[in-house]
Image (tube, rainbow, N blue to C red):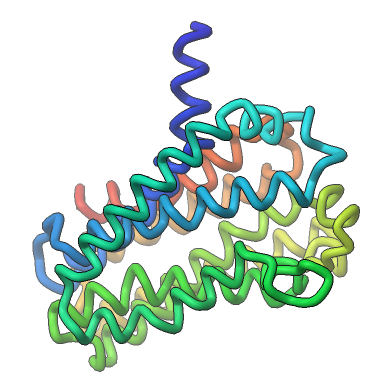
Length: 282
């Protein structure tokens, strides 16, 4: 049992889990736009880039939360610090390799999200602040970058980036990511208060934050319905994304009652894998 827990900790906090989630979202875009998916260079680039960025984020984040370093997930992250650095190094190599295997169009399209992502994890602003430390802005940056990387990049590869269906899908994905990110702000209320980072839950409270998440998921479903009307999605996809929306809304509703971080790092991030599985199944 102890060995299993170590494996789960390494999977979650070594950032392989979130990298798999990002890859699943990119594969889902391929599946919905092309009827099939494959581990193309752009998909593998998404995996390695996510692994690299989250590895940096974990390490830099430790310096920002020293009073909490011996508690919960931070204690585990500190324990696996050397592992995270190693995986980040390997991911950087993998990212560089697959970056040059993608088309020039994708390389250009990566510039803006790459700069935003690096600015999110590296303290380049005054007082050693990151974009993540700019309060309300961070969640919108996360949603935008994730939608761009997991929808727009695969769509560029398929020459479908400028279609209305792709734009609707990108908005749908951004709304979904926005919704599942809010519970993390609920979880981090104490940490963000210590770092003087203003977030939506700190401003409007937990109950209203969960309502905002539910509204975001409802808007996501509306975008899904529009793509169904356009013929991009079939009835199976509509059902799959509806089930994803309902189950995610349920998980978010109970997020403030859960204390173990597995619920957030494992399940809330894992809703991306659940959604991909549902879309693939139906």
